[in-house]
Amino acid sequence: MTNRACLITGFLMIAATAAILLFMGRIPICECGYVRFWTPASDVAGSSQHIADWYTFSHIIHGFLFYWLLWFVFKQRSVGERALGAIFIEAAWEVAENSPWIIDRYREATIAVGYTGDSVLNSVFDILWMLAGFFFAWRMPVWVTVVVGIVFELLALWVIRDNLTLNVLMLIYPIDAIKVWQAG
Image 1 (cartoon, rainbow, N blue to C red):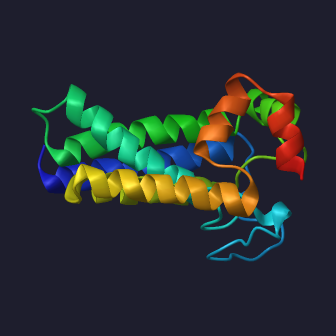
Image 2: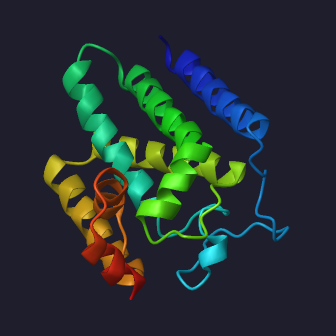
């Protein structure tokens, strides 16, 4: 595929994801009626509703991981084609994450008791943040990407007592002691 074809296909994949989320009943933007670039840790209700929040770091790390996975599995493909694979994986997660089953799972197994799912705006930007991580991993030495990923994980852990590692762990195998610690 040409770079142009990859760009157009990627745009269409992201637009299709937004359409699916709207069809699922997800709200386009925050119910508050405005859009913020950054949602601070103190705005729990605004988390997953705006352009970026503390969970944005997790989506950037998704990009790192997807780059390495798709490079390993599809070395013969262009970076643009591998980016389409990453968009597909992240978009599939955004649709699954906003399904009633996963939303309920977050409420039961994690500290996200009031979690209602992402706005469509947030989901679209989650995909774009993942792409930023994907292209960062493509251009940077592995050790730099690993260090940045570790810093992101530790920073989120320190500020919001959550990160990609704990998020996955608590969804798959909830541990009461971690849930208590996260609740403060």
